[in-house]
Amino acid sequence: MALRVARIALRTGHPEEMAKFCLGFSLTEALCVGAGLAVSGLCYYMYRKKKKTADELDNASHINIDGNLKDTLEVTPGARLQYAVVEGVVEPVGEPLRSQCHEDIVGVVHKVEVTEPRLGLSSLYSALFKSHDKPVLHKQVTSVPFVLRGSDGTAVQVHCPLKASGLNMEMLYKRFLQVSHGFSVLGWYFSGVKSYSQLETEEMLESVGTRVTGVGQLTLDPDGTLNLRPPSDGSKYFLSMADYDTLRKQYSAATKAWKRFAVIFALAGAAALYTRKASLDSVTTKGGNPVEDGENNQENICHLPLSAM
Image 1 (cartoon, helix red, strand yellow):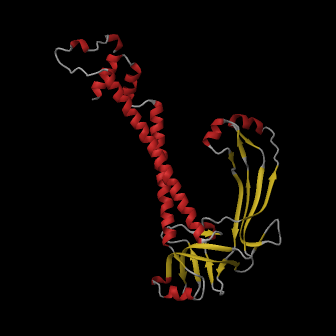
Image 2: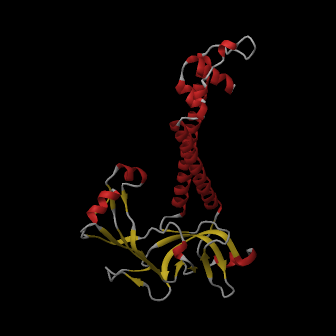
Image 3: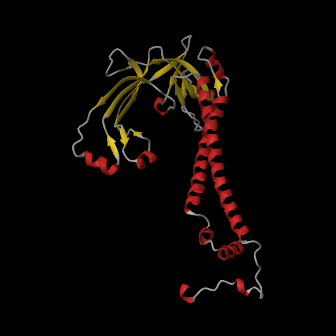
């Protein structure tokens, strides 16, 4: 079939078709197919990852923090639940952290961050990156031990809060700092990126009436202490100010979105392949019925001068 297409392309006088045949794909077609398949693969990977987390959230045991929690874990093999959901009010163990900008606000997790918002001046930078990029110049996150306390006073000790996902804390302070540019204007010209200020922010997980949903491994120590820590099987560890149902809906929506993206880009790649096949079929039909090789078909042989070889 390939030989027939090549011979017909020569006979019909379409050198661009012959060039596309010899190269397999044109550059544009190769980029479209490759980009479509690569992005589709990435979207499918993210879909599987989000779906795994969504399924784990759906199957997690939702446990109330009350006096029955210890009894439940005592009769559970290993005195632990591999993946459980608990909700309670944040309470520090010992001295809480204090805000640098508001001395009357205390909490258990504190983050101070200085970023440098940047504006892309060139279309290339804006196409490859976000139009507003914010490299982190300084970041300091600290925490103190704390528990999630239930309505009857039962407490669950929270371990490794900085490893948890979904911890969107309250913004306490935000300030833009003007910077002197000096010779950095030349850097803007060559890099295509303009740095116009620095942004200093302060966030805190407050310890006064803040309700948090924790999802992770729930264990009971021999001394009777209840603990919430990252799951040992690699499942996602959550500390979120959203409730359990909201958390499930967020991951369910993200799963559906990544699935749609994977299908869309896969169809785009398939469409490019179909277009390529249609173009090859059109080359075949332009020459009519191909003439088979044989002794009586010498007039169809393409003679090339030796200098061309």
